[in-house]
Image (cartoon, rainbow, N blue to C red; front, side, top):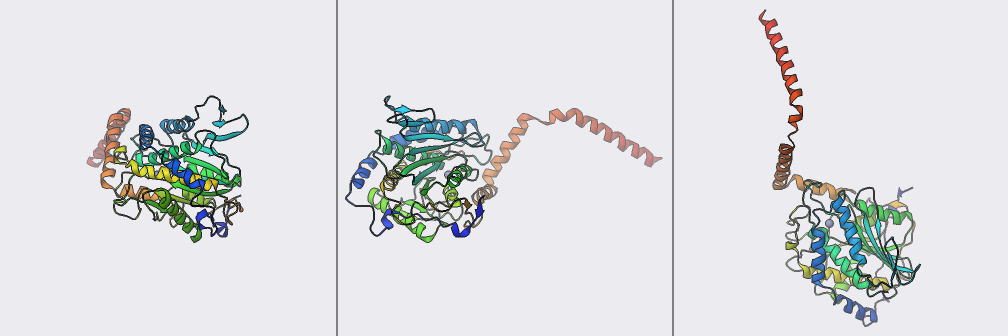
Length: 419
Ligand SMILES: [Zn+2]
């Protein structure tokens, strides 16, 4: 049974460059290999994938299109394994030999239409490094009806992770990993991190060892001075420092922009589910959340369109995902004390969030209430819908009878008074 154990809510992830005698050798094959892979990130591919995802009318988690988008993603991830000599099973496994699958791309079903998608590259150990984004999009005014392209939130991140997965696994077989690498594409983030909570709750229940999770969300719009913004909150200070230093290290080595620390100030994306279940989780996003124009985006409306995106910036995140996955995938994380925490599981850790687990969702609801233009639009749509449906026509006979009855009663009263 899950209990709460504040003392246990201390997810520790030790990153290679924070170890005095680090696993990273600056001139190693790892560096050479990562440079070769990041050089192959293509803005054309990124644009094609964002275009395909934003073309779904919505990716709302409780819609048929939301499911279609997840199935499209599974097929897209498997599309690179075109070699007919590869063994493949019905469940999304691809392997060199039957029974020795090295890569799987599977749907994780939930109690609503949209599944999450999990792409897994088996390593020598089951210590797991997770790169994540969310599949769903939402138009908060009328989620079931209105257009929600979700280009920045979060199609850009899905595209970046598709590129990273493809580069890290092809040509098949990929170089043997020390640790297991997983790409998680969660359903229902916008509904309160429901997909990630289900997946990571299941990992927790199965006592899966997760080194760290890195969530990619809203990566497509940079600040005037572009950077990788890192939010590593509600974690032990050493883990926060580890994320910031490690991502800073990867940025300085493989990217043309630095990493900067930022903060959401509430449970703002799926990495909160990692922390909730005792795993280290942090977010990378396109711009400082406390910076200028941070609230001026078009998230959760029909305005979250491709035209707003900077594909050079998205490419930086694809490169970061390649570097993070390759480097941590090959590092000896078990040797680093505290890393690959295999500690006691079965508790929830959501005490750390200032406004609770659903704080993020409440915050967006509040934003809608204080957005007069959006609210007016919402009311207008409601009025048009009612005008089209004309529900009063159904009730006219009933209303007529009621009016007649009331009139008779009033006339009777008047007659009695006059008498
Ligand atoms: Zn998002």
